[in-house]
Image (cartoon, rainbow, N blue to C red; front, side, top):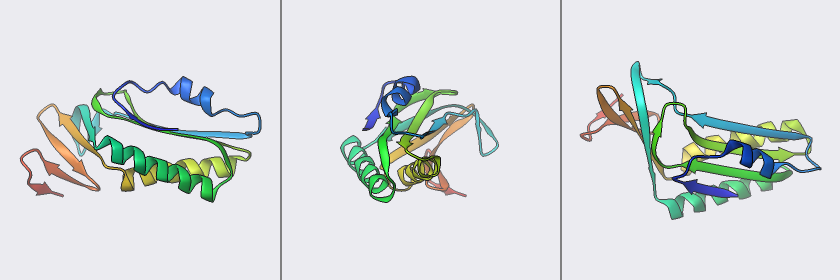
Amino acid sequence: MVSVTSNPIDVSAILAAIQSPQAGGIDCFIGTVRNHAHGKRVKGLEYTAYVPMAEKMMAEIERELRNTWTLHNVTLVHRIGSLHVGDVAVITAVSASHRAEAFEACRYAIDRIKEIVPIWKKEIYEEGQTWVVGQHDVDYMGGGKE
């Protein structure tokens, strides 16, 4: 299952959904909103996305996972909208017969989401805000900074 949602992510429901009697390993990455970035205090994040394309790319990542590893279940969910410190922003969860496949597939999934899925993040600080673009930031007025 893949999804881009404006609703809070229910981690317990996702973990229950990916379980399988054949699974010897379930691995999950949970990305949360932290209270700092780039030496600044973060108040929250805003995620925006081109949802149809984002879900299409996440479905492609699911296909890549299933073509590379023998997995029982896969769930990839990313939240959009305004998030507060501590909120779950993204989850990648997989079940496999063996732990090595689960670990590798889960790590690959979050790395690919960050690499190819059209979801954009704005960090909101106590004093301003910044769009995060890949490894670099762009200030709110559009100028680049390293």
